[in-house]
Amino acid sequence: MTSLVAAGGPASAGNPNNSKKFTQAVTLEGVMDHLEAFQEIADANDGNREAGTSGYDASGAYVEQVLQAAGYETRRQYFDFAYQEQGALQQISPTPTTYVTDSFTGSGAGDVTATVTPVDINLVPPRASTSGCEAADFAGFPVGNIALVQRGSCDFGLKADNAEAAGAAGVIIFNQGNTPERSALIVGTLGTFDVDIPVVGASFATGADLADPSTTVARVYAAPIENRPTFNVIAETKSGRADNVVMMGAHLDSVRDGAGINDNGSGSAAILETAVQLAKVNKLNNKVRFAWWGAEEAGLIGSTHYVNDLVTNNPAALDKIATYLNFDMVASPNYQIGVYDADESTYPAPVTVPEGSIQTEDVLTDYFDSVGQPWVDTEFSGRSDYQAFIVNGVPASGLFTGAEQLKTAEEAALFGGQAGVAYDVNYHAVGDDISNVNAEALDINSNAIAHAAITLAQSTQAINGARSAGKSGKPHPVEDHQHEPAA
Ligand SMILES: [Zn+2]
Image (tube, rainbow, N blue to C red):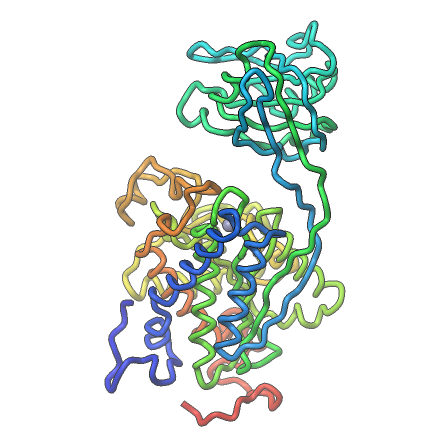
């Protein structure tokens, strides 16, 4: 960490009640310990920590255990969400083979074994086709067969919809194979097309395999959508005003395809270690409430449930949230140090930015400026767990080190790394494991998160003015006061 050791011993031995001491108390080693625990959990649970599965449940139990050991009371907030088990794709004959696959979002449910009929595919470079884009592609299609269509020229949904209209019992959509990026397994969404037959994805190689010979029999399976319970984990500091709460959140669930160590073990671990260290601070003006959201990857379900529950059942409690800070990917291997651009100085926001968000962004950017750390704006898009908060007028900001988009030359000059390469080449993929985190980025952002926690725990005056105790504010309410000696 960057700060100096205070005279008389390590800061963590005392009351780390200012930014310098507190950023030092939240160590990279402490955060990495949590990431290693998440990796072990994924290893023991089918390689992932997806909501609705044992890997997620174990992640939640780990967070609770660490928090409880630090003195927190934890709360599980359960909710149901739409869960679909993994799809399947097998060659039955002539060569029994099981392929890596999954069903498309919006696929119908079904389990079909039938002969595979290629539909206007093109296996010869450059492999350009309009496979399945026109109804005419299916002229003479044998009703009840499985349609094998290739990516390219039109929406996946249109290809599947045309196949269903032609009497296909199932659809395999395989990648185009024209570039290395378009050769791996492709699983996408059928969008607004209403498709009732099972539709699964395949790599180019799998598609080529199934196309030859044309008498191939395959099995295509897409699971029905079921309601599954999952949960958020919530905990807050004992110290601080209950009527002026600072919230920090990170989604705890991974995608199905990997351990989710950068996305979003990183944000989860950073706020967890911040919570552990914050419990040691003698006296806070404002409560800090931490949330580990479930089912973010299924569509921001956990955070939306939390906010909507307050809107419906306890609007006064929603009103007491001074600001919300979101941390979704803070250790991308080819990182940027990105801050949600609440003041829209770089990106016009596609959403309404609540008042106080600019001042929340300032807490993060002022910190980076104070330690000479370069940073860039990242769009205040609402495309993570802060969405439900901002929709309901709660100020927000957060940090983001980047996902599948490519790093620019300017960013490479600021942060190092490779221009023209994705911030996280393993985004939503099996490679998002413990080796997929950039320790430097994680250290920088853990410091920023620690700084924001201790700074806003002492005052949110810049964000919500008179409502905050601030430095010149009201005394702590009796019910929230911890009777330790003053720092
Ligand atoms: Zn994420």
